[in-house]
Amino acid sequence: MKIGLLGIGTVGTGVYEIINGEKGNYFANTEEKVHITKVLVRDIHKNRKTQIPSEIMTDNFDDIINDDEIEAIIFVMGGMEPEYSYMLKAIERKKHIITANKAIVSEYLDVLLKKAEENNVMFLFEASVGGGIPIITSLKETLKINRIDEIKGILNGTTNFILSKMAGEGKDFGEVLKTAQELGFAEADPTADVDGYDVSRKLSILSSLAFGSHIKDEDIYKRGIRDVTKADMEMFSDLGYVLKFIAHSKLENGEYCASVEPILLSSKNIMSNVNEEYNIVSIHGNIIGELQFYGKGAGKNATANAVVGDLLYIINNEYRKEDIHLKNKVISRGIDKFSGKYYLRVDVSNHDQFSQVIDLIDSYSKFKKMMVNKDRIFVVTEEINANVFNELTATLKEKGNKLFYARIE
Ligand SMILES: NC(=O)c1ccc[n+]([C@@H]2O[C@H](COP(=O)([O-])OP(=O)(O)OC[C@H]3O[C@@H](n4cnc5c(N)ncnc54)[C@H](OP(=O)(O)O)[C@@H]3O)[C@@H](O)[C@H]2O)c1
Image (cartoon, rainbow, N blue to C red):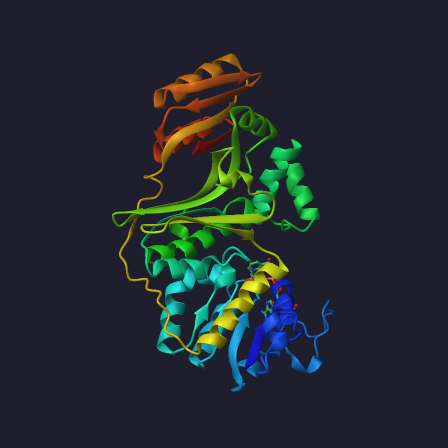
């Protein structure tokens, strides 16, 4: 089987080494030759860590799409275009496609699934969520018997690294972010990670498969972790909680809620003990109950392993019609079905402001606990609906108060 590889950066290099470098068991032992015969890059003259024969490198997609011997194309370039247009062309030319690109899968899952089915080819995207964790394959298998009504997890290694280090080393957000950038765990522009866009795309893909309807990224509520401070972390530890950046979606009677936000978990919760770059995903099925999947969420080898797993699925199954259907009608209810006690920290600068803040909080929820430390008020509320609580924090922010809050689960 001849394969086209689009992109040979972090993930593409891993894929190339497993297949052509025969690092992968199957490729080292098979009689049948499975080979990457063409590699697309932007710059064919760039120095690369892995030696690639120059005759298989190209900067022209037509060399790959017009090669009738290539049966499958692996897409590991990144960004929306030209990758999405190339995917459509590849499917039209009856080539199987495999991708790690969560932005494209989250936005165009319905279009790509339909087009692949019409053209009798496979469209597989295991590596787009959870790196090395085989969550998509497991989700598809679980769905054959179960209705899945809830997904929860830690799906971003960068933010998990930041929160783990803040908790473990007593450092501030900015300081840990800088270390993460120096170590290559965080991008120079960390927005996609710390503000929840990366996680939200992954949650959109998992929820779409689980709920049988295309759940768009824009319908997922997102709130990042930039405002958490060292003082908050010390308070969580005293209260017996651990802060995690949690993706959560649930479906009830055709209505769903989906969010990505910082959540406080009991220190005994399994997810509290998932640290640094590791990810965890929990799914709930009506028959199987709760299932959890744990592993490395990104990186060269973990992601390449998932990509090549999809390729082996194609090799072993020839063409098999996928069982994924996105035909259910479900309605978004924002975050209205989420509720709980909340932790809230508000910074105050004088006595008047202190009284106003206390009165305002009190008008929304009774306190279960209140602590005051110099110019900060820390409150744990009674159970309150997520939308109502957000109204309170929006009012506090309008009045110029600096704050951080998280629901306790
Ligand atoms: N890195 C991870 O841990 C990880 C984890 C999960 C999913 N992913 C996804 O996997 C994909 C690849 O990520 P990566 O980290 O491997 O990216 P990367 O290191 O930036 O590599 C991108 C590769 O694609 C090529 N490329 C980019 N745009 C191109 C264009 N317009 N035409 C031709 N070639 C182009 C680049 O060519 P040049 O080398 O010539 O510049 C490079 O070889 C992304 O969709 C990403 O979201 C990555």
